[in-house]
Image (cartoon, rainbow, N blue to C red; front, top):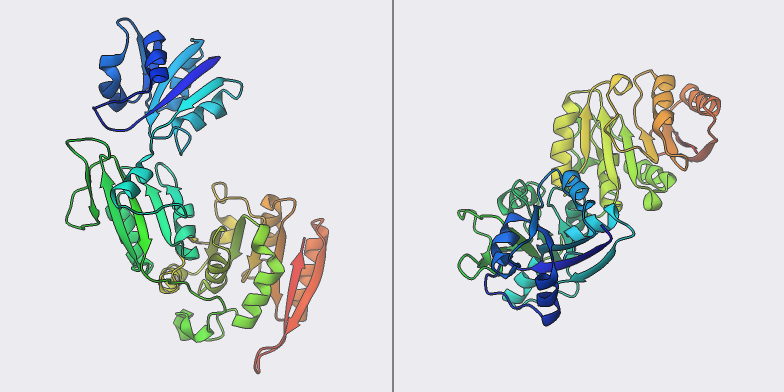
Length: 389
């Protein structure tokens, strides 16, 4: 495919097209789009044409495109807004493309609500994970526009928000926007059935953000044992040592209460946080504490880290070791095998033996170990914060 015109459509069956778009359609021979687009545009297509349905797997569709020099593609709304034009540019970087957009669904929903949207933070959950949506909630974005799909529906999204205490938003839902017969816009109603396609806008009513530096006593603890948590001053100093502002993936090995993971998630919402804990009780503790402190999106994994399957975990560029179960060498060796070249490991030592083990083993592994701080909290023993780059 050498040339491609991508035309954005709404769900309206009362089409108004510019003269240029009308000419492109009349002169075209090969057309492509979703089944919904075909229904909308079929009456305007020339007498003889080839139509390629856009269905999954997309790779098969793109392979068919290679048989043609010139294709007219129909897509929803603005094809460069989480749209099919982006897919085409990735697949055919040298294609001669021209895009003819219309309003995307989030713009249309804002228009229906007479809602200024110049500062709206947009997220797509269409076949995508929760990460950017959770990030927007944690950051406290005032206005969040979200594209949904058949799994991440308004009901599922609302339930997740309530689960993590984000009841400070009003949700507006737009369904079948542009379709004269089926369009409906209104405030979220848990009793309503929302057919696809739909989208939502969340409008914040009050700011709800959890400050970092959470008091230890606020966490649900393992069997109520106050010593089974990284103390708040040490926790914050450890996060500082990890230098997370420019990191992408944090692993918390031996998370116990989840305090380090939660503080990291709150302070750096862009981070993907994967947490490991051998105790089965850790799963419940992470659920309770992450919900209490409004920190969705932490991937908590229960089991022995040394034998855990980490092949599908995002490779870390920062690792905090909160517990190693007497297997310092095994833990460090496994972490080093997947650690990004620019990554670092932070470990809090409570004894001379563990300090020497960390320094010597990381050096053997080709890393550069260093002592960052030594901190004494209340009447507890000094804790040395160590880092290996």
